[in-house]
Image (cartoon, rainbow, N blue to C red):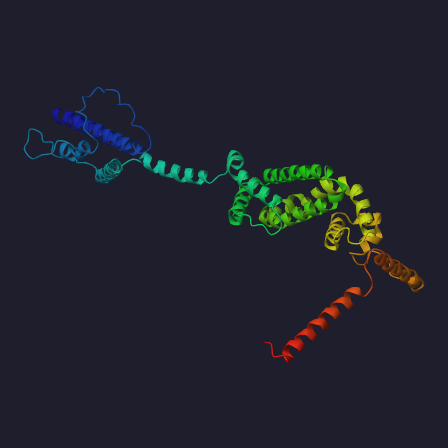
Length: 369
């Protein structure tokens, strides 16, 4: 009776320990995944004092193997099942993994700081619209001012590399539209001031001042267009299907030339009828410039444009040769009336050369060196 009771007691004790070991193994595995579960409710059989995972499990074989009854050396309970060793080894490996996991330090904020630092370095290269307005456009604005107001042959103390770099960065940061709008507005305001100055000019200097304004603007375009070539390639040509140089020439046409063409053309025709009232170079620059701005203006004075631009008039006919000869004779008579005698200058130069040669020959014959 006692032996059967001891067997039942030993069997129930082994079953309890197996359940406890199983629960501890599940708790150790779940510890890697989620916080540990709450402690189990107290059972009817008193449990041994709770120990850290691992120590309690390692004590299981010692408790369950050598239970002895009233007879020496005879085991009172069943021997531990063979698969208990596998369970214990698995639990030991779980405990070892838990110890390693505890030994490895958790990610410190330094790694996050490093990531944020690299991100902040990347964000530091971003050009905001405020940066563009406060830093980049003022540099471009000052350079454009100097280029628009320079005289031919002047030295401009600006860094073309720096200006090109500003344009490149602004285009890469998606500020092309704003930069193009600012450029057009800047040049438009300049041309409106030029137009007002021409309107206030007296007739005797009107042609010369128009020539200066035209030449100065066309010279500035030779520097402005290359500086903004990156914007022209990746914004104006791609999205607007236009060209920057054509747009800037159109601005001069609309804000200056169109407002003054009807005042300028009568003065040009008058200067043409009076030889050397305007220098030939000035007349040629203005006529060629007007033709570049708008070829349709040829119809206002085809004869004037034909003197500086080829193939303006239709080909000459044999029946019109006499008319051309009469026009040449008329021009020669006008030159004579204004004091330009035919052949006088050539005879004067020939006489001066003859006199110089005679004096040189006399000096050499007398022994002068």
